Length: 115
Ligand SMILES: [Cu+2]
Image 1 (cartoon, rainbow, N blue to C red):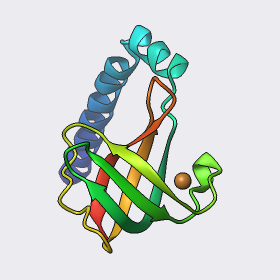
Image 2: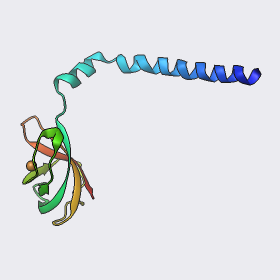
Image 3: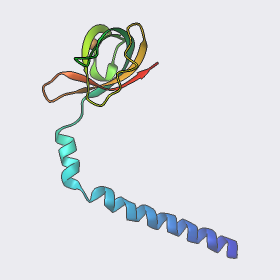
Image 4: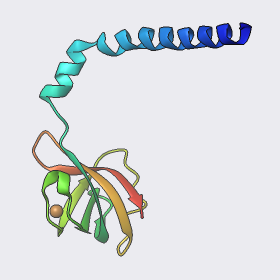
């Protein structure tokens, strides 16, 4: 009986915590709407690095299809966003990456990892 009561209390505490957390998520509607009007356009891809220009933070990748962007496979250059480690970008290396549409309409790599 006592054990049941403790369990019930634990559940109540968990519920209270969940309820307390929920308003925190909804409490920033302005931020939410901003996120919606500037919806991020991004996609995940994999491919083979063809060439790298470290100084220009540019990498040419022969990438497979990226369904979320409705891109077929192709070889194309990408800018690599500031702060993204370019170490995995070595000619001939297989990489997995995330591209994100920039304000100017171009796509930049925002995540780059050896595959
Ligand atoms: Cu492409």
